[in-house]
Length: 181
Image (tube, one colour):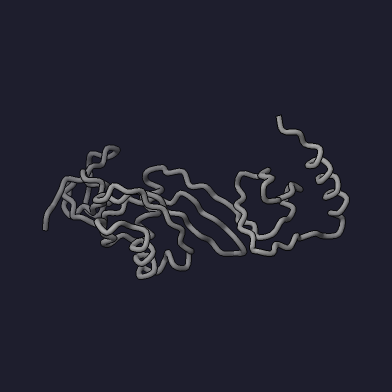
């Protein structure tokens, strides 16, 4: 087994079991105290988006392949992310032929995301125009809430409730009178 020194700038005392970045950009897991690490994966991924919709979640993972140097980004459902085989398949579909998935798991990616302080955007996916809890209209093209992602079907029904019609008319008047400078 080829052991390499783990690069871990924040903590000079690295102990067995710690996962971090190897000098070539791949991930390694410490198998001896003080940083001797074995290769774990060529994928150096972090969670960049967490998207909620109808009680389900999806995660967007972004990073780099250590051997190819190419950027990687893909989205995986929470149900597939926790299944090792499904997670490996999603990673394999997203990478270059030069990179290997190895022993990377979703739990490892979550740990590295937290450890490195990577900012994860928390988004809500909207599948039909509607009103937010704050009374803001959520309409594609009128992006009043930066934490909303639209994914409309071919036919998008609007969710309108009793009492919303007068508010909707007023909002529509304001949108029609809006002048772009």
